[in-house]
Length: 116
Image (cartoon, rainbow, N blue to C red; front, side, top):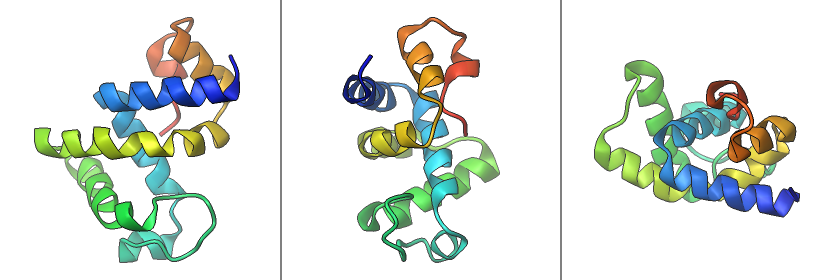
């Protein structure tokens, strides 16, 4: 599978699967610098972490998910709408073999999903 195809399939999975969307949320949140996490904003233009428009809301979602272990149904709708934009960043920072295996269903989902 080409990297472009993998990114496109991952975008679709992130838009439709709550578990994948939540794991991606935490993964991208962890890519934020400590200053960005604390300020709920984008400070450095380093190509990783949330974009400026998403930083505040997605940081708050990540913190809530870490505290409570869930998001509301309305928050999940917003997350599934916004998180696919980060598919390229997830592919670039992950083991693409594991992502490809999970997208193709050749490995157990838990073991092959992007690391959170």
